[in-house]
Image (cartoon, rainbow, N blue to C red):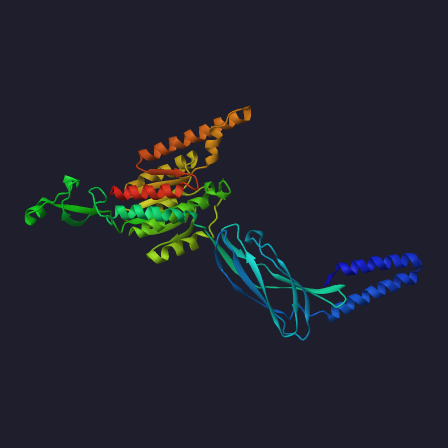
Length: 430
């Protein structure tokens, strides 16, 4: 049961009447009338319990885009339901309007559409639906809640997709789909063709030249069917915010661009998300299945406020990549976690694999380092400069162990990581 504002207004009017009359019988009369009105409303209001609810609509949406979920309310009872529906969703679902009027005659059905624009990745789950049915006097209402489960998964936005055409154009040049193939662009033999001025003389195939009676050169292409393992660190450093989003989201964006590029290059891509335990894994997917599988696996992942267990991560890498692979570690370049956690296990990884570390840099650090003007700005500049020098020192230590380090802001990291992959592929280092 719910009491309305109209009942409060009626009670106020009754109070004025009692004050004018000044009699105890007036109090009883006013209270009796209000009580009768409430009872009549509750008796004549449409039943809330008998309503039947169901949902349909979008269950998947890309972060920042709109999804629509339809709530259907059926009234199998013999009485009209006139009231309000409250469809509750968590705040991060981005629902602008959670309440809607309801006028539902007996035996009919109404459809209420809710528009969601999620502001966070992951699953947004609908809460209970509360319906209030008013009586004819509007003094009181029946109220009840119904379970109408529905889940909308907000996928990573993949904003770096805009860089894919330019990276694929470079890949086509690398892959020998342009008119001229040159030695050094890959290490797998592709075909023989006649020599043209400007070709590298080291590409001349002397045996084929002797047989053909004309100068013949070999053409090369990048290696294919190599294994790329993307390892996403979901520990505490991934929770740090860079701009308006967590560092984890920027790392996911870079991983998606590299995965899309590597599959087009003919390589096999697997994915692991790990901190102290395995959070998600994608393995053995075909070219068409990979990206949908990756975004579905990444969507519910949140950074955990724990130190990553690099021993366990290394063991997982060695288990999933028994042969030589390109291992891409998407983690922070912070000195303490790298020096005390990652560095001790790196020799085990670099002996078998080519390791590439990609880290999201905060542009605010560079802004602080350039600050001057007052005491606070100078202290900020000192802190920014120290942070930058520490990262340079850690990157140099990683490079000495054979690790390729790529760093950039959330917008710059995805194309830089893709360029690093293409450079390794062109040099035949995968």
